Length: 264
Image 1 (spheres, rainbow, N blue to C red):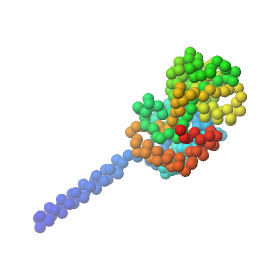
Image 2 (cartoon, one colour):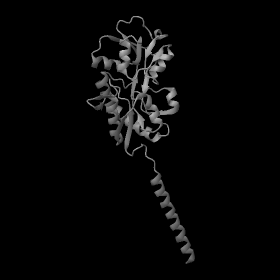
Image 3 (cartoon, one colour):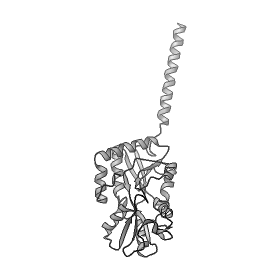
Image 4 (cartoon, one colour):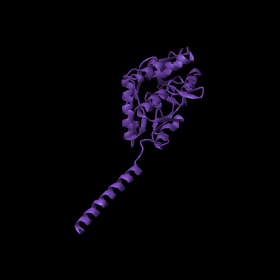
């Protein structure tokens, strides 16, 4: 009888132990996002589009629509946190938001500190200048010249790489005004951004020079997140794969860029 009682007590203790562990795991279960079932997105509404901008006080643009479609696939809600460009990456590191979706080019330097999703579009670099500029005929012609690009961006890195003096501009529209006023000889940015700007603003006084793939390879653009969040990275990649497969990425690309730039 005593032996049976001991066996019973042993089994009871084991069950209690399992229950405590299970409760502890549930209590300590870590959400993939800062707010459960909500993806908090840091972005910089630039004012010109096509990636994200305010229209009648409402956020819109390619990346805004893509982010909404992405979270729908994930079964998450979405919250946008408009942030100045200079504070975006620092804000991600400080965990003010879960991800940054802001035309972020994937570079070796950034990959050392942050994780990225699979690319959702591919960007080509151009120099934007006044239509009467006959001095700049190739990318290397910016050596010693003042070129507008936002501080901390891949564009600013490229300006320095080819010997130009980077003049910081907080947004695309400001960069275009610097070019028009001859305060810089050109601006380094993406082809798709300029084409959108030219179309919507009915621009006729500016032109662009596209860099060759030899000089500046096509840049993959992806969602940036912290390296310690591999579970969220997997979920985002699966959702992006679905958006690519069902044609959503292509549809949004053609809507905003009049071309499919989601494929390399």
